[in-house]
Image 1 (cartoon, rainbow, N blue to C red):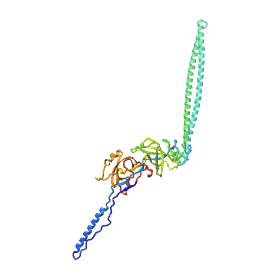
Image 2 (tube, rainbow, N blue to C red):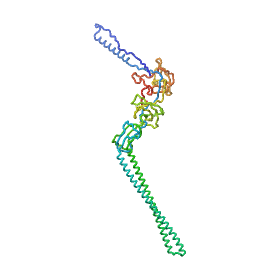
Image 3 (cartoon, rainbow, N blue to C red):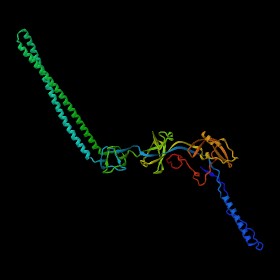
Image 4 (cartoon, rainbow, N blue to C red):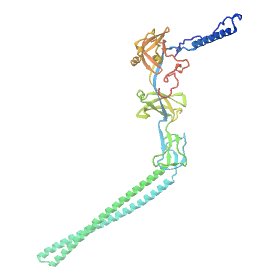
Length: 482
């Protein structure tokens, strides 16, 4: 923006000329009187010179500067900071404790999925595996012994069943004999003594049957107990087998393998270092999956988050390459807020291509997101709305000039046009602003008109030209909120 500053310039006199008093004839004036008059003339000249110097050396500040109304593009955006990281980053840890015995990967090494990158000392884990294998073998022997006991108990139960059947047959035969003898005794064919003998035989057979039945019941209970012991032995065997599998898994976990294809970003252990995984898995390596695709996690202020949309384009720079502008696209706006010192921010995930591998994980990104843009519109500097002319009865005023605050609330503002060294108030309708210049949406203000802005000293930074960081021709876009 071209700004013309009108200053009132005065010429400072280089010197003052004095006319000395006419010489006095010695014969008419005494010598002392002549010296007194000369001193008085010199004192008056000095006082006059000092007064003139004070008058001409006092600077006169200009009342205003001027700016030209012109057409330009206005871009409004938001600024934020964030950090660069890989899209997929995996922390490789250890689920078992031990001492690092081998390292097969270092910083920046490319690794493949399943590749061995480290080993723990397996001696203790191997001993635990051997111990559990021995316990498992012992439980297998117990299972076999319990199985033999079940078979013996079932055989005894079968024998007892046979005894019950035999006793039942004997009892039935004794019952038939007793019944026959009873009929014969009634007919008088058989003696009563024989009937008593058959009765005694029947009672003995019944007692033997009851004994056989009790033995069979006991045999069945012993068989059930043997089966329970077998199931218990089998459960102990399964438990021992599981312990063997756990020991085998722990031994296998002593070999650290890469879970994904990628690049080793960080290595946190050295050979001989003890790894303790009792409370939580320690991080041994940090592997980034693909460094050609990166993402930026941007911290967006809650006042700006409503202006962002998914799939919106953003630009950002990093301090390592201040001349390069990187382009990305918002893939996600996370709903979870982050509160730090009563400042609420939301995380926006920005996807960015990194084919040249310039972006490194952890870099600070200075992000600028364009949320609105207008091209070739009539603009004036924002300083024009802050200008107020000095109190002057000859200067015409308007209601809008007397109440600029209420006018701005209705998107109406007053600017002062400079015409023939006179200030004339003009009401305009304002549009979009980027904080530096404002769009003139409507009003009797033509392109090229000269408007008044507050005057600044020539050596003041405020008088220098300033551009919006979102302007395409402006300086590099940096982070931080405006």
